[in-house]
Every structure is written in structure tokens, then in C-alpha cells.
Image (cartoon, rainbow, N blue to C red; front, side, top):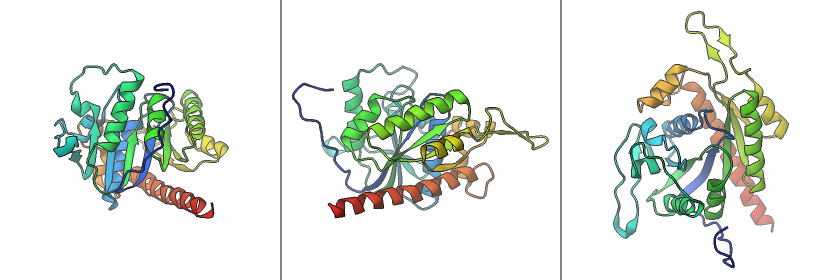
Length: 277
């Protein structure tokens, strides 16, 4: 990785940012970005200062979901000012190279972008920086862990067998690079019939919770398969904006609260380890 003979970089803490949480999934199409965006908005509504970094270089959907197509301003000293929407600061390759041009990138370029988004963006003081990863396992995660110490990760899966198999791979990958898995989210868990309100298990609900138990990682919650959730994201008005009392938004607030608790727990475990040495 990188040039031969170069010492591996030691991850540098980002001043002013308390918790860095990566949101990943083993495969695409499980609604990872939907979860990342809605949980970021929920955290902000719960009173936290939140940033959202779109590290999904190949399919950056965050600007669409946040409803902002502006380009970020470059400040003095080549710092980048993050965009702000719905109370969340965010940055995305989609904001820098807008439109439908696919990003074709090799490892080193990718590493550069990840580092830039972490170190050159003027994030200011944040309680949480949520990092939306590309689907699958790979380069971006390695770039991240080389650049900053992550508090932990969240794995998003649907309850289908194929997605769960890939979620297991994602858990294993985070463990290999020593990133704490703060929990699993089961997205598209079930579908509630709008007419009779009966729950219909499309992908066989509960699989992600069983996986969490099997791997000994926290289960953060379930989100139903709901056309309104997708529709809100497509219009740049994610359902979490409706607040905690909304039936549709409530699951994201539950996940946000659980995530905050596990992030604090993980960070305090880490600091106690350092004191013992």
C-alpha cells in the first residue's frame, strides 16, 4: 500500500470532533445512505452537533438526500467549508463533481479524497461525524483507519440471507482493522400494508438481530420498508425531519439514541485502557 519503504501513517485525531462513526454495509442496495442521513438528522434534532461525510465516492447520494446541490466554498488556507442542511454539516464528492458523471478512481486518488474530507474540511466543533462508506469492504475503510482513529462503525443490512452474509463480512472486516462495531441496523425489516396495517415480512424480519446476537454486537433497531422513507430522501426531505413523534421517523431516533450511548461507552472503554498502560 502506497510507496515502498514509507512508514505507515499513524492516525491523527481530528481536533474538535468527539465521535467518528463509519456507516457501512456488506452490499449495495440495503439503504445504508438512507440510514446514515436520517440518523445524522435525528442526532442533530436530539441536540448534538453533527457532520456527515459522504465517503461513498462511486455513488455519492448524500447531496440529493440533503436537498442541496451547491458547491462548497474554499476558504483561506485551502480549507473547504462544509455545506449545511437540516442542521447537519456535510461534504460529498457529489457536491464537488455534480451531475451523473461516474467517478473513476484508483486507490491513491481515493485515499487522497478521504484524507482531504477529514483534514481539510472546516468541520469546527462536532459531537458526531458520521461517515457514509461505499458498499462492500475495502479501500475506503483502510484509508479511513490510517487517517483517523474511528470511535466505531454501524453495519446496515436487510434481513435477506444474501445481505446478512455480506453484513457478516463487513463485521469481520471492521474487526480485522480494529474498529469497534457499535451495532447493526435492520433496514427494510418488514412492510406494513397501508390498508390493513398488517406487517408483511418481505425479506424475513429479524435476521439482522440474530446476526448481531451471533457476533456479540449491539442491535440498534429496525426500520420498516416504507415508500415514504425513499420518497423523502429523493426529495431532499428525509423522514427524520418529521421529528421523534412521527411514527415513520421514530425508528431513526431510537437508532440515534442507541448509537450515541454505544459511542460514549466505546470511547470511555478506550480511555480507561490508555490509563492502565
